[in-house]
Length: 182
Image (cartoon, rainbow, N blue to C red; front, side):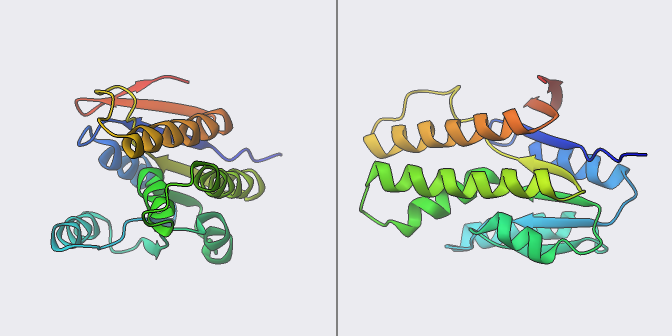
């Protein structure tokens, strides 16, 4: 009997319940979970957010902290975990942007983000694991006021589209409620 691993993408606005829903799905499985965190504690407020996220996760879950090189690091650390919960793509794209500093070379940044996302897609397609991937939908709000903000929105939108195409199910979180899109 062939096993088909499930790939789920959860998107939505800030504070829409994406991470909570992802954790509920992973927890309901009863399987071993590898939580892949892409957040970087660059200031005190972010450190507090990371600590709060850690406190909300079951102690039995394994945590892998990797702001970039996510696909490779999942491969190396997946072990016998059945569920891979990746939270989140938004901060991964941010980490790629940070590598370039003030140099807003759009072609280089887009290539680096695309490479990261392609590595994740290759990882989810080659590992016999269930994946739950969290990302922000940033295209529903106001048009960002500056070029860097608009470029970030566009690149994250492309990354989200690539992942949505590779996933079996896609959910849009609205006010804490999951709306199945795919």
